[in-house]
Image 1 (cartoon, rainbow, N blue to C red):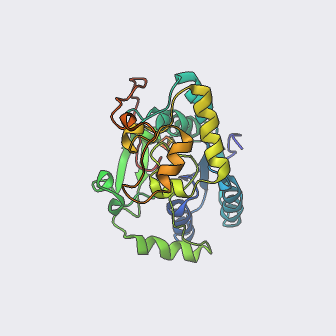
Image 2 (cartoon, rainbow, N blue to C red):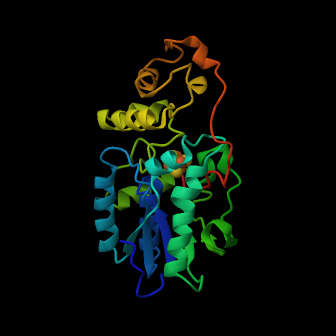
Length: 265
Ligand code: SF4
């Protein structure tokens, strides 16, 4: 899946195959774009069942005449081992190592003349952090200086959902799950399966730290407690050791580039 393309793509969509990605692929199809490459950024840390969706969505994208690829990276587990810790909201080095760098590498290999236009599905309405997201950039640093186009920048969710329906997909009631994200909120975690929690527990045992910060989750420390917190009503969770809610963070103090719109939903 990482072979170099015979012909450089004219358009590149980095895709997690969540709602925004599906809508963007459908948009490219309805605009009659040609020579489109759809690239899945494989973090090696997808939630239970997500890779099945990726395969299905890749088949659909291929049926539209697009070429599908996957990037490779060290993977979330190995990255945590190497760093002897987990990324955090403040020090979110995972985004660069697992997504941006592999994406840039893919672009260098497959579009050496930097002619491709990179499409992203960011909407300003999504969050405060994205409310000033540009509609286009003549040189996007996160895309190796290529032109970046964000056709949904001013769209509302309903506009996007129309495209998802055109594509024949259901609108997912949750964010994409290509990563069991360190930014997962209560609602995301309620969607974690038994296998997801086991995977979190296993990597925590190996690394010797909780993946989610206790002080941000009423003192819930470790996968088992996080699961209870996620399934509790607002304000009802009580940690076995309430002082964990006050404990300062203890993690590697390195920030590379942080989470960038269009890479980590
Ligand atoms: S989805 Fe979350 S855990 Fe995965 S790379 Fe992005 S910020 Fe990090």
